[in-house]
Length: 205
Image (cartoon, rainbow, N blue to C red; front, top):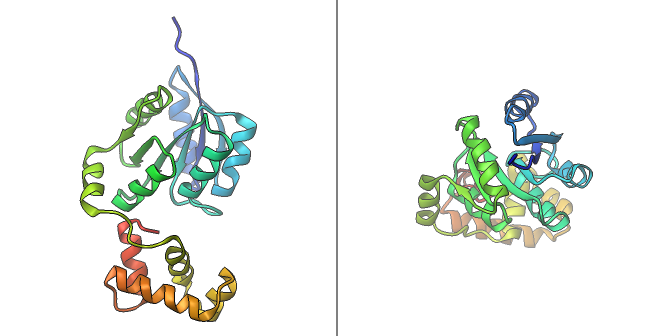
């Protein structure tokens, strides 16, 4: 009996990587690439149009991160299972991916055969997470930053002033200072740029 074809949506901002993945996965008899996007804020619309069974989302996407796209996709198309892929195997990313409802979390340096197997597993109702990364995530503990602290810290990454950040996030300048101070304290940093680096290194943003 022939296995049902698994319909897959790819979200990857690097055109060469996206094209290569599409070609390789399409070689699998039971996998069909039904949509490709380069931005996180295009995922939901593409999924509604293509009706994929599985969405393969890169974390680092313009417009919206793969994690944010996963949350939106799970709300818009609950039957579509999500696999997050990333260049960086950071424990904080894994925790956030699971919180976003992802059923798989893979680092990009694995073989395409492993990715195809993960797609089949997730489509069948299972989960796929690298064991070493799962152990590291448990050891690392939860993300210490609140959602607002993450927003403010991320907004400071381009060197914006307190007033710029406040205007962009519709907060008062004093509130922005408080969030930044709290984030700096929680990360054990000396200033906001160090706090930003620490948060990115741990996958907290």
